[in-house]
Length: 221
Image (tube, rainbow, N blue to C red; front, side, top):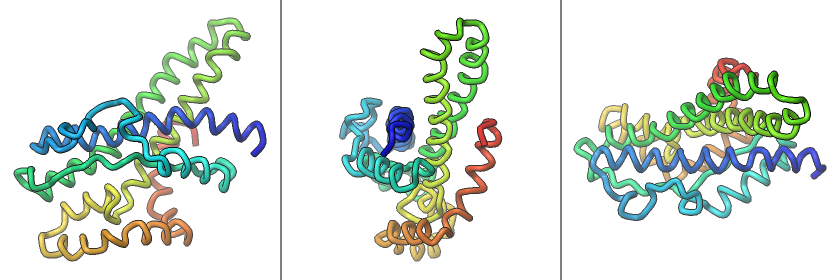
């Protein structure tokens, strides 16, 4: 891996860590507000990333994908926040809302990153000396752009409508009870199905329109 690839990986590391941490905490926090204290009791309603790090999903997988795709695709995940839907007043509805909270939070993080970049960092670059801009503001700009990309991709990937991804849980909550029960039976094979979708290119038809829309919206596509 050349030095430029290492630099890009370092720039992406912090946004990935923040994105997956907030994603998981959002699941647990919304579940708690809906009546399920499981995540809170297990100490998972914390923004301390070490409580959410999964060695493979948070560290090894993003590095492997970055190297294998030459920086074109980076994805990672944290340890899933435990949720017990039986604690919800309406289990399927509560699970769907809790699942949606993760991707929604990622889009909010992308929006905040964009607003900070557009209305603070870029105007500041025009006011400070060029040396200061290159030394301080340029790295911050690169991190914010990476944050937008990482959060949009994470939201899009998780909304693939296959359980146990968030999109699958949302769809399960929206389907009639009988169909939801039948659909939920594919969950043990969910990640295999997702991998097939990714390697066959079919996943692009599900997530790329979403990614393109938001990256255009945030003016970095």
